[in-house]
Length: 179
Ligand SMILES: CCCCCCCC(=O)SCCNC(=O)CCNC(=O)[C@H](O)C(C)(C)COP(=O)(O)OP(=O)(O)OC[C@H]1O[C@@H](n2cnc3c(N)ncnc32)[C@H](O)[C@@H]1OP(=O)(O)O
Image (cartoon, rainbow, N blue to C red):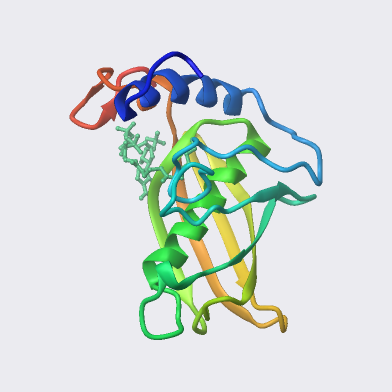
């Protein structure tokens, strides 16, 4: 790593390199597994014991992940919590950025829950960037169960930011200074 141990120094030392990596990763090859947003990302970080550990690949039209929710993400008995499902969609939208090579963050996120996401069942999530309007990326995603039924959909607006958005000490009132 970079000789630092604590979470703050990890954020300062790791995230900018990762962000720069993402910004240079447009047009990754179809079938390629995509690197996590950060080691501790709640959606995809391998080092986060409470995370979803989502693994996404590039597809011809966007990105895809097959994910099963577990007991730690339960809401009603046997059913994944809606917030955990939203996390999965949001994280997959984050992976969609690899297809356009832009750094961006979630500004709005809307989820349609068509049917319950049951624990321990594999769900296929697919997301893509539908449109770009200036700094706004409009994204769409769907999720299907293993019987082919669509169980959820999501729309999001991401807004592009510079790498400094992720660096502690460069933000004022929660807004990036280098856009
Ligand atoms: C890099 C990969 C990370 C992936 C991790 C998974 C995704 C995440 O969890 S990201 C974390 C959650 N999100 C955040 O923390 C973001 C917090 N919000 C912010 O920091 C700021 O609001 C930020 C940077 C998004 C935008 O702020 P700011 O730079 O001041 O932009 P602002 O002027 O308000 O809006 C920018 C543009 O978006 C437009 N816009 C803003 N909100 C919306 C919206 N809800 N719908 C449509 N357009 C919008 C504005 O009209 C503006 O358009 P234009 O440039 O054409 O005038």
